Image: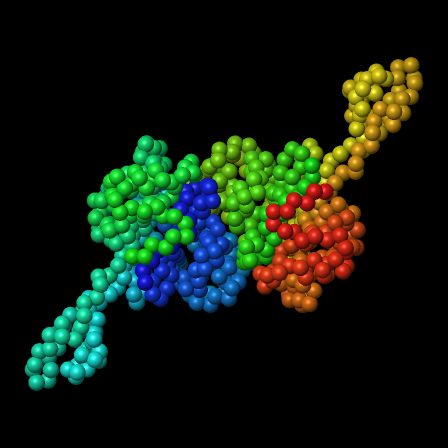
Length: 300
Length: 300
């Protein structure tokens, strides 16, 4: 399981029933919340997403449409008796904002929040099955993108086969990485005899809010799914640049140059009621594009 | 026009589709927003309430279910090109929270916010037609109630009649207050000849979150409409007291002793899906009670 559910896709002021940015990446064991605009806790309830399975939250930047729902979610988790630790990855100032709000309410959360300030590119989280890297994007304020990658051995052991050759369980980790086995008598059991190849690890890149920056293509190279903002249609490229946002065409250019497998576009400006044109324009440059529509779950 | 619209009525964690606390008092000329839980800006859109007519916002206390929607609303007002001044009446610490959030976003609002910290009981706002007083209530943290009263002259001038007695317009303000007019020749024109009595000024008291405190009855004495929280059913009076909240019965006792004309109860705990029992219990003590249901407009 490696699937992304969209909880909101609008920029700035909510409009036409579209909520501000929030997404959930669902993997076998846990959920990763990416950005948390106002109302995210209600969206989680609406789409029956279990907040108890969220152990990591990633906030790209401190514009309100990406984090105003966070304090409500954190508070509710506590009221709902969460005790499990939570990891919060965000720009440094967010810690101060949260602390001040908890202090004003004279409240202590029931669970521990590990605050991980985003200060440089690289690996920021590593669960047993997913690694997360962050990378800088160019926006009006400090802003970060995230890449989620499955951690997977290239091969899986076929236990009955391994047993039939009397390979000890202690050697299985080597088998998963592709090693052959040498018996005590010196016979070589080729790896392919006792393992099968795994599908390659899946990956998702979230590019947050960014001005058009083709150098992003290098950072997201070859991911299975990339979300890139497309706040405006292509005719508004001057306005987009002034506001450190991108157009449909620009998002698609990054996808094409980055050779990603699929592109999702979102963060639509409140000036647009209909979104058809967004899809058409992006597809002209990069065909495998979809709109990040609320409630839709994109399985990788 | 003196009417209250409910935008949210749930306590703490949103549940059963019920939103956190927010209400709008609508008068002839302007709107007064009372508390602003998460999602209030969406609720304003849903019920087609014009945010441009809101010039005063009142925040009772700094528990999140009463103000987490404020920063989003303020930011959106700016993005929607508001230029008109806004008056914000709230506990002092809120200013610091808002300033920090604006600083984090590197944002300046398009309009001026006049922050009026709530520090003592008494008159806090006075538009030409409405006066607002605040009073302390007893909650786990610093918490305020508000009373809105129409400012009205006791009588209205009948212009044709006044003209027929050649009463100068400059004397109308005295007529509205009930004075008789004396002509140059010394003839007394009785006030009743040229005026009609106005309906008495209407009033609304919002009691915010409070433990049961019968002394509130004095503060809200005789208002036309009183909102009093009723977080729990009466059997939960011990839990209510522990959490500085009230029950149905307690809210109704305050209404009865305060001789208010009508009682609204709200701030229902997320443990209750159905609300029928709340109404029945309150009505046993104070018959003219209604549930503060979302979207309902109570005209005084």
